[in-house]
Amino acid sequence: MGKRNEEVHFDQDALLDQALDALDEKRDSTRERALSVIIGAFSSKMQHQFVDKKFATLLHQCLALIKKGSKKASAKEIALTSHAIGLLSLTVGCSDNAREIFEESVRPLDEFLTSKSDLTKIPSLLECLAIITFVGGNGLEETERSMDILWRVIHPRLGSNVVAVKPSAPLITAVVSAWSFLVSTMSDLKLNSKNWQNLLDKEDRPVRIAAGEALVVIFEIGITEKFSADSKGASDMTQEEINRQESYTHLQGLKAKVINQVKNLSVEAGGKGSAKKDLNNQRNLFRDIVDFFEYGYSPEISMKIGGDSLQTSSWSQMIQLNFLKHFLGGGFVKHMQENEFLQEVFNFTPKRRYLNNNEHRMSSGEKRMFKSPNSVQNKARTQLLNKQRLLSEGRNLGHYAANMVDD
Image (cartoon, rainbow, N blue to C red; front, side, top):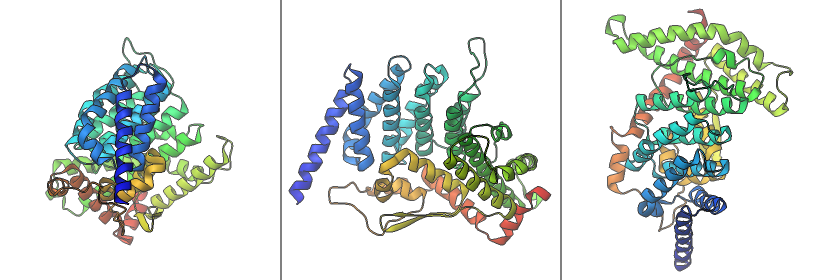
């Protein structure tokens, strides 16, 4: 049995090596097939051994395709390349390699998105930027930079050589979804409300749903920050905490403006939009948002992963879970069972590890780095736990959230 496993492992490594070599081929269809092989392999298994040997080659081959892709590559090739970079980032987890992916990829992604040479190529690039920032971004400034890049896709800085083009509904939805995913990782309220109220009025239901998710995450962050600041006396507050209080006051005004829209969208009978599934999704989402606004309730999700249960109890976690589930597709369950980075993000520990003797396990050095108080993921985990603690303080916070509008 052991020999058979070694043969399968060798065959897959050989196939990945061939696919990597094929990324240099001139024929588009050859490169697309090679990228599909790489994506399939990284989705179905944690490819640590291959990454240990070929990380730099794979990353730079993919980046080369992105850099030349604004004019030459097909939308399919750009989508596959973007997905491969995102999968590579999720595979390496919180590490120096993730930092390298982020640092090397942000500029070419920004340049490609700014060029808008082909709008059909953009949605996959948005997802890629969100994923590599989620894994490899370090701190508020880098996250905000990526969020700004995302937002400029639908609200470009107009100049002499920039022509304003009305973005399509699917493009707005993709931008807002990726933006919300990154907002969900933040614990600071230095946020701009943008044009959320206008987005709730859009004809397209997926846009309204994405805007609703963005709004509720912003309010969740605002409540957490305000609740934390209220535990201190005014004389003990830092300037940063005072700024957060002011941002919270701004959110109060925004909430007063959107509360009726949110209630109307939770009971909409039809008319705007068309798909019945979208209508049901919209109603369910906005009913949950009304519950959050009025009673402080956050949606709780319990999902079976193999024989284990993955649970979330905040809007931020729900947004992250849905975004990663969509990105990983059929590879989601496998990654939750074997990807230690994602297990840390969702505080999920499978009772049984689906690992064989050849599978990668973190070295003691990697574990020290991953668990270090200064590691990016540990900081994110600490922020998430603090947020969860504040959001689960029972009736006090529920009453506090429900009375935001009356303050």
